[in-house]
Image 1 (cartoon, rainbow, N blue to C red):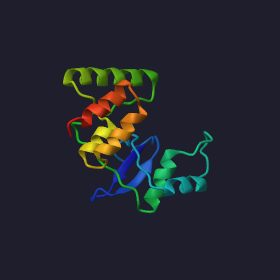
Image 2: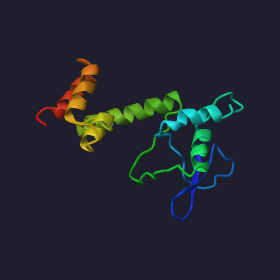
Image 3: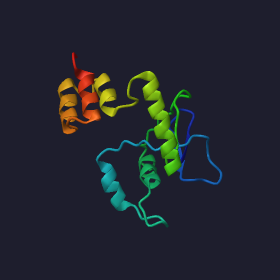
Length: 146
């Protein structure tokens, strides 16, 4: 998917796999939708592949002037995980970085906690759902002593 914006960075067009891209900005596939997205899908027609396409949902938000996009800084790595090899490559890169840094990379609960979107008790409740596995222990370690 490719997105083009106007001079104020507002999205103006979004196209799935265009032959001639309207810009050099790929939509990398991290989407946040409100409750209306489900209702919007009911209004969409399946594509030639017989599927409701995420591009069509994004285009519906664009048409309503409710689509927002965030450009990632140059320092952010984007990895294509659309193939088994791509997923393996990304997994190995993340594992190597985590070993090198000694911390986990982009744990959603950790990001939410550090940004005050969830509190200590919420992290504890989430950690409890993982029991004694490695992830649950990691979440609990985040809030110990906090």
